[in-house]
Image (cartoon, rainbow, N blue to C red; front, side, top):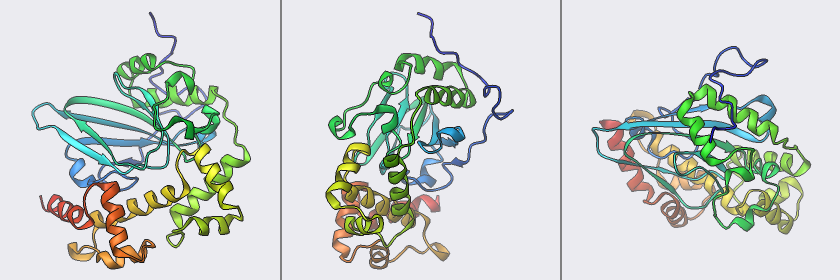
Amino acid sequence: MQSRLSVPNRLPPGGPAAPRTPFFDSSEPGLGVLRPREGREKFRLLRYDPSPKLAGFVRHYWTVEWDLTDAEPYRQDVVPNPCVNLVIEPGRTFGFPPSPSRFSKPLSGQGRVFGVKFRPGGFYPFYRESLAELDGRPIPVDRIIAASGAELERALAESDDSGMVALLDRLLLDASPVMDAETALLHDMTRRIAEDRELTKVDGLCAAFDIEKRTLQRLFSRRIGLAPKWVIRLHRLQEAADALERGGPNGSRPILLDLSHELGYHDQAHFIKDFKAVVGVTPEAYAQRARLGAER
């Protein structure tokens, strides 16, 4: 059956004259990608801005390509963001709800994946049902946009990054998402969590936005799919991983006690426990592997 999708190799009329320039690659840490210096030797990660009309719902598009034909397989770990990702990959194209657990992607041979990272709460206007009911189950693509997983996989095989960006812009705009008050509120709340390191407790978020805790918990559960305490925790642990990877002057590593206090942990043992539960290793072990990677 012929695909009903028209796959543009360039952006549609009225948009920029040339393909959008990627603004991030795997040479930089951030957004939950663990061991980025090590990873850039194994794969290429690029991110693209969505249409300005989608910016309130979609954080960015992303693409990963790798060629490990003559190399050992590699496992890339990612600390999850509190976001839904629509992932286009041969045989595995779905919307994936956020999770408090680390995600590991085995890479071998050659491959390419394209994805849409929605903003926290930005997916709900497309899905229009509670994310809490999913219980981690993947979402069929045709519940999100007017396309099937098989059609998107064919598009991935036939087009370059700019073609995929243009195609997903069109499909997502055709879904007619509405920026309602709750979507806007969640955008402001999650931005505050990301920017304010002193905001480490749910009670602090309630006070900052004058909202009752039960109301806040229901809002996050329904529209993000995670409890607010997990959204705060994931942001802080990503910051910790970035700090341990980045290091300080002359290759020094942050002192764990200082780092844990900076991220709002008053108990270093609690920080180490949370870090290991999400990242998979202790902060010291993570810093040691990052240091070895930097020395290669």
